[in-house]
Image 1 (spheres, rainbow, N blue to C red):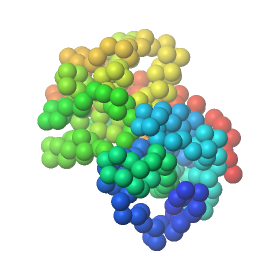
Image 2: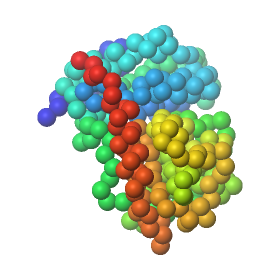
Image 3: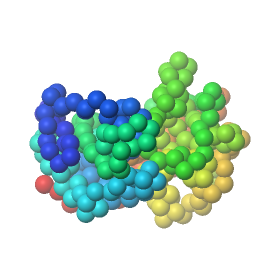
Image 4: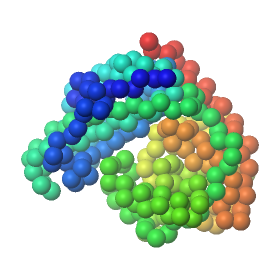
Length: 289
């Protein structure tokens, strides 16, 4: 069993049970933070460069200073060292949190940042398609606003928390968020894809979904295997009802197929093929030791 006793904080390794954030932490007080969740296998972090590109873009939007350790890519080596210290050599979920340093109220005292990396053992060394399809529905109680924060992974996740509560109350596996225009945006923690005929559909970034790392990979893979791609037009419920396959994507699970939306039922033939192709790409590099 993995040890998983350490976290990484600003370049130093601390025992997880002894570590605590300072009062006034801006992530806690104001949600002034970004995060990335990454999958690792054998201390090889999948799509790490893409995660850093998204993180740096988010930091620029939030006017945070980007430290040398992130610009240089050295952070990857520190996280891999953390995996070694925690004896995690199989499936791992990594959460990297970036938050503005303590100081100020709504207006920050400065724009320098701190970071924390945490690790968690997970069962899937590779991306495995779920055997039992998901049951989903729409979540309409709160709409996702469309603005320059919509595509970012920020620590302000109340919308997703409430959507998760709704799914739990309705005995659903997941649910779909909609924006102020009533267009389908994403799942609780995943991007959404639909297949109809030879066309793969996913909501456009201008409609407000998180700019998912796995979303990017699936669009590239689907294009390479001959799908027609539609990622610039809004997705409506009518398309959901007419699709032959529906699936979610995120960096930890890869692809998760949907069995049912209300009375509609779906297949998973292409989801299986895309998962196989994803594994070929994600795990083709030699493992770092």
